Image 1: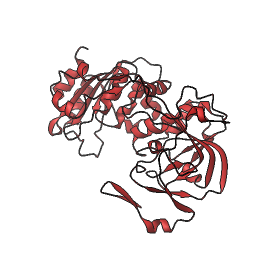
Image 2: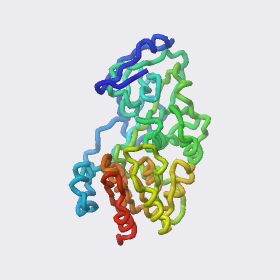
Image 3: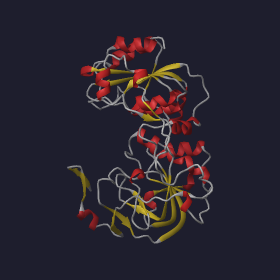
Image 4: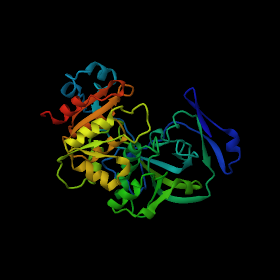
Length: 371
């Protein structure tokens, strides 16, 4: 029903004509409201540390970890070209948005948004196509409710990184709201919402699927922001509550040997894994572990090795100062987890695998060299 063409999204009009109860709405500027403007709302005094909109703080703490970590790396010029020398921010203003007379727009996980009575939406917490289109679809509501907390619609619903850091992180304000307020979500492909809700003592019956709320209008919808793309210390603080109380002593390798992604496929990964096993390094396949097992594994990890991938999301559960060795195909080099890992003072070593071949000696030396 949608397809890409020259960086724009076009809707299949014939498809839409067969859908009853929908209308086009114009996507306008994001709707923001400041805390000082909120009147007669039960929660107005509970969000004293939160900006309802949001200019960045005047004293932004930028830092660039490249000079301390990678200035002497043998591929430093290539790393700079790939953005490893950029600056990141330790703390950003947290945000919670408030929409009046809110309802759902869109018809799939890429186009979902929640809009206010004037058809304004917040692109940051909407589906990934919302910034590319000039109109969206909404439903003619016939049910009215008072309030809801709407979790952000993730950029990529089937990607573990996006789901954990964008959607699950939206739960951090639940405890500030009444215990009976509904929580709107798009889907739960990893069972993550149910897992974290249980750990937070949140009744999962409060969670309502967006597909069942298309004809509902809410007096007020609260929406928590996503973290900065390179994260900050606040996201680590939230996920630190779910760490396991175990010693951080073991070394793990996040295997992608079962992956079908040919761009990232490393030719001699199996050979590296054999060498790692000989040195008592545990090989894990994150996709085969439950969330509880993943959290336990990363809580106890002092050294983490692996090809670039969503498995590194679990560094959110690491303790301070882990050693991270990330392997890159020379066809796909990303600075993302280097930047994110610096909020927990990680000792980070990237290894670029030219022609997708791992230099096993280099990796082993990086694991056992003195800090």
